[in-house]
Length: 155
Image (tube, one colour):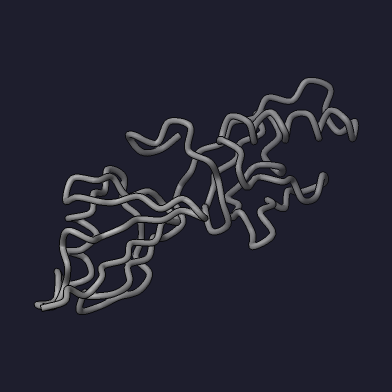
């Protein structure tokens, strides 16, 4: 899988993948995990991908190709080409959605959004993924799909 520090990365809506079915070019290509969390593949249809690792998706595709009797012994590989974006909200000049880059830390993410505003509480920054919220420092790793919140400080 592309990217350092993302071992065990779980796929989600917006991730773009390259899937290769060896010796079967028409089944290979670039695919996006859709809003429903599935990847639409030729012949076999939608394969649930959200929450799976790239390796687990490979196994799911191989199983489906075997179950549907399209291939006797499929060999599939997958790689994340583009990760879903992360979001930054609050006391930054340009809050919004940003493209994820491997190895990204909070300081990199804040820099993309134009730095902190003069009202930002740099010690109260949180990063959330789903219902899990954690405190963040400048060196905290940011992952695809996470939401960074930079609160305002009270003077």
